[in-house]
Structure formats: C-alpha cells, structure tokens
Image (tube, rainbow, N blue to C red):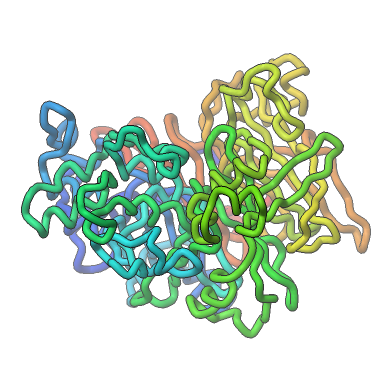
Length: 582
C-alpha cells in the first residue's frame, strides 16, 4: 500500500513485466516469461524517470512518453527459487542470463489520460526497450581511442548495453540522460593485482554476483555474447578480448524518446563516474549549460560539466544532433568545499600539472575521472546522489545520502557529521549566477535525523511529522517546490517507510526573495509500501498528475496476496482535478 494526503488518489501503472505493445505476451507472475518476452516488457526495479509530452515541443498533459530507468534485477526475475547455478554460483542457463540482461536498461512507454483522469498505455510507435544488450554509439573525446577498443568494435566507436541506470538527467532539447551507476557489479576481472584504473571503480572477480561472463563457453557466438562481461585480458591485444569493456560503462547515455529508431549515445566528455543524476542548471539563451552530477559512493565527489557552446533556443527540438553540439565539447569540473561557505570548481583537464603527470591524454582524464579527482584533492562527500535546480534562485541542491564509515576526526565542512546514518541536503549558488563560474557559495539546507535524536545530530530540529533518513531522489518542479525522496538505511521513530517530502525553500515576492523556515515548511507527502525505495518523480506540464516510482517493494505490492512484488509507477492526482500542492 501507499499513502497520500486526504483528497488525493493513486493509480499503479507499468509494473515490471507489463507488455509494451500488442506483440508482447502478458506478464507471467511465476517468473516463467522468457528472455525474448522480457525484451518487450517493462524492465525491473524502476528508478529515475521523466515525462515527455506528445507531440514533441508541446505542453500537452494528456499524452506523453514516460522514460523510466531500471536499476538492477533480483531473484524474483526467475521461475522457482532463483536462477540456475553451478556449485560455484555461476549461472548455467543462457536464456536466464539473457532475460536478466533484458530486464536492465530503460523503458520508453506512451501514456494517455482520459477525461476521467485515468491513465493507460498507448502504442503509436514510440514504445521501446533499451537494454544491457542494445548497441550504442560512443561520442566525444574518448570515442575512437584505444581506451574503448574491444573485440566487438575494434574502432572504439560503438559498444553494447547500459546497466544500473539510477538517477536520471535531461536536456533542454528534448532528450533523456540515462545514468550508469554501479557498473562494477556486472563487469568482472580476475587480474591480480587489479590495475588502479579498474580497482578505483570497484571492479572485482565477482561483482554483485551476476557473473554473466561465466557463460562465455567455447562457441564463438556465445563467447562474444557473454564474454564481454569479463574484462580479464585473454587475447594478444585489446582488439581480441574485452579488457576495455569496463571503460565503456560509467557514462551518461543520451536517448531520444521521440525517435524510436535512434541509437543511444554515450557522452564521454561528461566524464566516467558512478553516475547518479545529471541535472542541468537554469538554461538561459546565450549562456553555456551546466550539468551537475553526483558520484554515488562513500567519500566520492560532486562534479559539473559545462558546455563549450552557448544555448541557442533554436535547438530546442534538436534531438541527438543537439547533443553532439552541447555534450561532446565542454569542461569537466570537480568540487572543493571550504569552511567559510565558499567553494571552487577544479578543472579536470590534461593541462593541470597533477593530471599531466599521471595521464597521457584528456581521454584518459575523462575515462578515469575518479582518479583525476583524487589527484586534485576534491572534497570527499557522503554519497553524493541526485541534484536539482531551484527555478526561482538558480541554486543547485544535492542529496548526500549517508556515510556510516565517516569516523570522528574525518569530518569536513560539507560533511560535518561522523557516522552520518541519515544524510543531508546541501545547496550551492554559482558566483554571479554563471554556469561556467569556477567559484560558488554553499550551505547545508537540511540534515536528516530521527526526531528523538540529540540536537547535536538532529541539527535541523525535525519532528515526527517530517523526520527522514537517506535522502536520495531530488527534484524541483517548475513552480519551485522541492521534492525529496528517501532510500532509508536507518529506522525512524515514526516507523515510516521510505517516503517523499516537499518544501518550498525560496520564493519571489516581486523582486524580493523569500526564504521560509525550512524545518517548519518541510512536509511528508507520500509514503511507499514496506521494503521499498521511493525514487523517481515527475509531473505533467499542468502540474495535475505526478509520477512516482516504487523500487524493490516487499510483500506482494502491487498485485496482492499470492503474487510476487513488482516495482511500479504510482500516478498521483487530486480528487478535484487541481494542481498537486503541499
């Protein structure tokens, strides 16, 4: 069950396994759907998403494309008690692994709203699945270099698949940015020792236990299909094996939802990290565009990418061609936060002496952006995840989910709590409201906490009505309401499941900026079912329909007794048909 305020109605849509078109078979609740069927069905474990009105460029709120990330899969995917494995835990059934591969990635699904406010799936040619097996282009400085040469494409210009798509991003020209987060759970290596370039990204011999590469076998066709997940060097050169396959993950993947035959493109100029979100700052004509990106790991960093080109509104419907213009050339920065509330963006460029001493090209700097950020002494953060931009002020907000490994004495100004089990939200303002600024001011907007915690930990004075832990998803609607979603790693006094809260952190009264008291205004709006993460949120342009994703629910959500739990999208609307409000 989900909970919303009085006066609101919910509708559950597109749970895992929902057919995307008239060809796909119905979902089999016992896990017996095949890999081929899964390729035509909604993927597993919904995460970030965005609504794109139809037709393109319109403000239509009754018809549009919902683009949904699918972060990972779990044992409910398979029939019986789980997948078939050998004594070492390696998968043995190729079709089960193909099904797993097809459950990952992104779904594009057309939705329509009828006069009663009910939503349903339509199919006029836009619906499609992008999976961990879909061919993709590589673009930008790393494309075509030796760093991404594999047996699949010895030119280094294409690759296959996207995995662990978590937070979302978007562009002002109508495309979607799928973020590749924990790819180290899928690609493995048996190298000993593991090279720094792989170890810094967490690669190991087992990953998260998917072990798709174990099915490589001897037949060349099967070997190529599955061997790409094992990056252990096995051939004479990179062109004869998949030692570089890990370098083809960790990017932002640009997808044009309005062009169902277009090829997704991995934008390498934006850097390779464990991407959570990739949200732009305010987009203003004749200024460059900045995207803000968290690297979701304890003690990792906060980045931004600034386009070389200034925004031209004539590119508003430019699709992937506009992506070539704005995303293939620009500057990648990483953040340092200082005790006086100031900060600086440090350029990650081969011209920086510390980077020139370690790397031989800008392509290497971008491919190993984590190592580059280490070398310039970026500020280690408490799991930086989603960011969003206040449309009223231009300020950037960032969730720091938690970090229970931060010890006493290891605090820093932007992450001031040791054993930070509940996380916090930080905000920053670029100098001169300039997306290309190299300095900024910052403060901590709100600290997560139990209501009963000592004031030294419950710094924001949260109560039972708005206590929260582990902020993760984050989104400003166009009116300036900030929505905070949780992936709770700590129990709350109110025994609240993962939730979504809302607050208006700033408003304008004419030219005067108004900042209400954050803690007094922060309100719980939505509570998910037991065991879930509440993640992903967007609204129709008229602000009358909200979409919220439920990931890895427990129990039997949403179908009821005797069924397997399924991630799904919850549609929220007001009974009186008005705008979603606090």
